[in-house]
Amino acid sequence: EVEGVVRSVSPTGLMQLRDGGDIFSIAVTGASVDTLRNHIDATLRLRGALAYPSERERLLLVPSLEQIEIVDAPPRQPFALPVQRIGELTADRLRNQAAHRLKIKGTVTFVDRGLFYVQDESGGARVEPEGATLPKVGDRVEVAGFPDFAEDRSLLLSHALVNAMGTVATPPPIEVTADDLLSGRFGARLVRLRAIFSRDRATDGDHALELQFDQRIFRASLSAEKMSSIP
Image: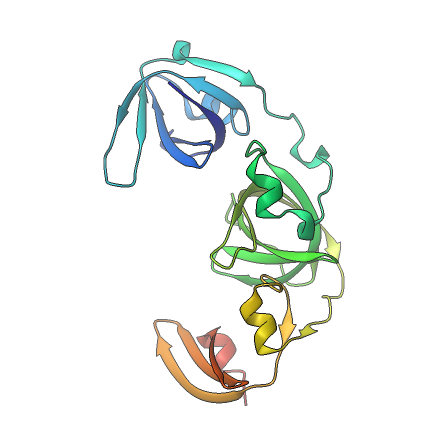
């Protein structure tokens, strides 16, 4: 038996569910994709056989819809959720909360390859949207997504719904030091620094720039298209 929050449903009908810190894939026999998608952001209790297709994957095989119990129904209007300040959504605050969608609002500062970054006056977050359509830099957006944390401990919203609300000026970048970058305090935020260009390592479609800054080496990633626009 597994109980958790449904985060997504694939085109083949495979649900992703989070139970505390664990992620499960759920296959329900005889259930349509549309029926399963009605359960996104619901808390479900499911009974089935647990399989391990790979070392890291947990798959629950549920024999029928009768083995699914709705503990908490999903909200009807995700964008009706209260707006949260990004800077207040820390790991300590979210650790003891159920992993339902939450909503933020801010300005898009970066877009690339299926993700984007959004910033409000308190902090920044990475967003991985549910659909293929991405906003543009400068768009004012509200985002309802499932909270996680990126490698640098900045906020990440996955399987997110996005509502564009017009275009505004992007926030000014923050002047930072090397210690600021290493502290992680400015993760997912727009920053500015002066550095010495060391070398460029080109990969498939990308340029990894090595920058020397305050006796430390940092790496900046730039697409080939943007690299070509630099004098």
